[in-house]
Length: 112
Image (cartoon, rainbow, N blue to C red; front, side, top):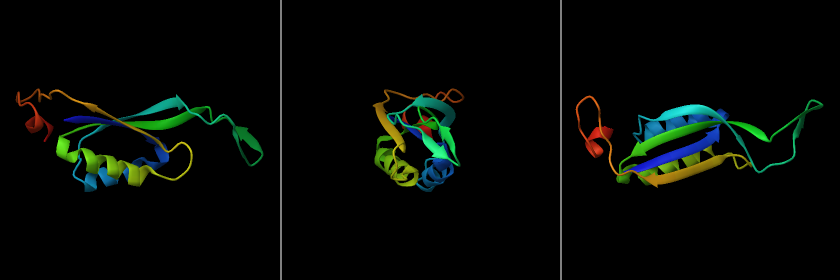
């Protein structure tokens, strides 16, 4: 099992959520986060300068079986990508086990 964590633009969240549902990843957790990125200069919009050092993003956490790892990652990349700086990051880590509290199931059975 793998834990996939993605930090994406808030504006791309609906597209990412829809792409995950299309590849049958129907359970995940998300929350709004603020981070500091690499871009040091601000942006000017209608004569007003905006700082881009503090960036509003959405953080998504998903645990999937090994066979869903690659298609989950590809779904996120394809739907979150704009081609601009600040599209986000994906982190993948190994999960030793998963337990469903209600039934006591564990492993891949607890994920579905």
